[in-house]
Image (tube, rainbow over all chains, first blue to last red; front, side, top):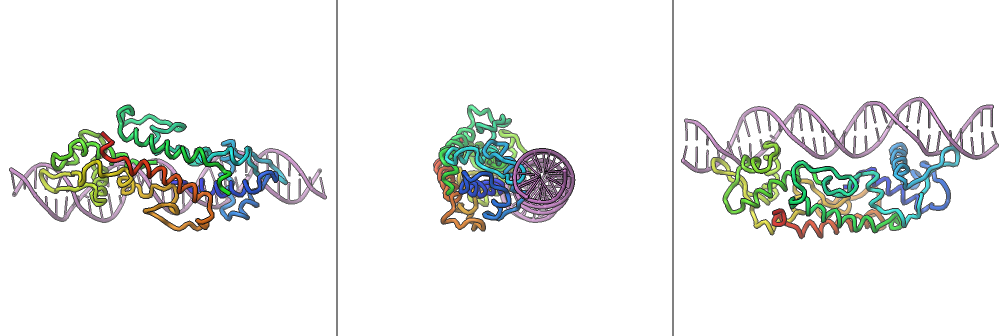
Length: 134
Length: 134
DNA sequence: CTAAATCCTACAAATCCTATGGGGTTATAG
DNA sequence: CTATAACCCCATAGGATTTGTAGGATTTAG
């Protein structure tokens, strides 16, 4: 399940996509279009900035803006920044791999099938981009 | 992400599949093959029984057994019993639907794409069965 | 009757998610 | 230069969920 954080992120990104190219958009303006906790959104946008998806400008007239064209930011990127692994198990995650203590990974049926699930999710989440939010 | 509960469930089900047809298998025997907390597993097997996947027999010589042939129990069934929704959002869940307060569902980009993710997960999870665990 | 099992409910412990608070820093306008 | 608007950062509170445990009740075989 997507966390609230990721859900809010997509709502905020929708607004940023709509205003893409108009220069930095302050949090207050985002919240005006998509009502949510300003403070919580602040931490989310910060994470997206650290994740390289957003840029920011400080001070008066500042705000957040997309670093790339919407069509170049996949859903997978956004979800990984905010929720971490897309795979249903750490031991089949491409980006957040952790060894599994209980199975030998080569000969584990669960492992094999969860890798299939991972791939089928990624097929959608890497194809879909912020441009599809509109 | 799969919960520990679901992971333990699949490990236990693997054992039950291997011993399918041999009559009831007690928890103690399952734990001997797949080490884990006996008590925790007890609650898990109980849920699987209530979910209709397992049957049980009480008393001496009792234990748990599969209600159907392994090939007739999909991963989706197991996951729904233990973890609930497979969809990444309640508002696109087939079995655990809840209305979404923040979007109008018809015209929500996130909604649309998460439904795609749900479908791609289900395509794998409904096809794969306990028979694939071996 | 006794031992081996499941059944059931409540709860304890730990972790994670959600959200808030407060102060600090930076940049612009005037 | 000052006021103000805005992002930056961290700590933490509160709640929800997950994970695991305890203890007793019930059932069945021998």
